[in-house]
Image (cartoon, rainbow, N blue to C red; front, side):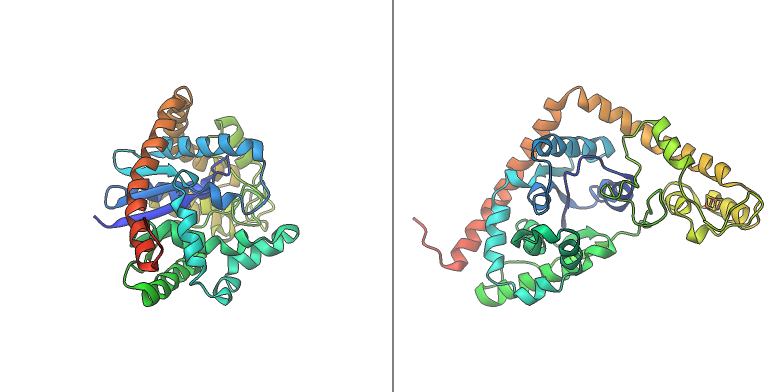
Length: 326
Ligand code: SF4
């Protein structure tokens, strides 16, 4: 089976953007690929974070992955820092990665702007650690969104540089581009994100979801119920595209552009579809929260299985590097 690696940061609350852009896709992929999914806590420490929350958020993220449908029978699910070989390989990759390559990464430039007071080496080396995450397992495929394609290109470059100098050890990973629509935040201004506070959480209670939908910005040109709107510039429609079927999308398109339906009608339709998909996830999460020993055990077993693979890769890497072994 072809192997996939992908990771998610332990940011605490997982929102619809994370779910649609990554996790829902992972659930499908685990039937076709040998999947390695990680809660990437070492990536999360490259910016300021609440230290006292980290362990809790990491466990919660593992719990949500399971509630959303990842299965330990099909996938290896683990916490990045439980397999220290990730950082060992990242260090080795630092020695073959040209600085110019990481400096030109769009995400680094963006993060450097956002975190001016703490532009650290980890922030710059983020895609090198990402390369190590993938190549430690010799994964050939990485499911990503558009914004991560540049990092996968870099991981190919890292693999090429390493192989050219030390021999043919690593595959050149390919991206599996997510076809999921980009979900905008309820403010209609930017991508849904926890830091911008414009998100709907996957585990949020129904009343909270409705309140956020009810007050969410729509097509700003639609001031009155009788004004026709344009779904293509409406953030509510971006969420509909991820949760509603084609016939409903056509109905909304027609209703919106002719002012046949109002925004509240449209939001109610979306709310019903969100409930259908999120209620079983919320129920499963509640069940898991009452038995966190199970979640801990899944992460423990996952780390054990990953360490075995990592061990083999690192022995090969240390050998080709010519390091002294006893
Ligand atoms: S009817 Fe729906 S798609 Fe049209 S502007 Fe209102 S919320 Fe957006």
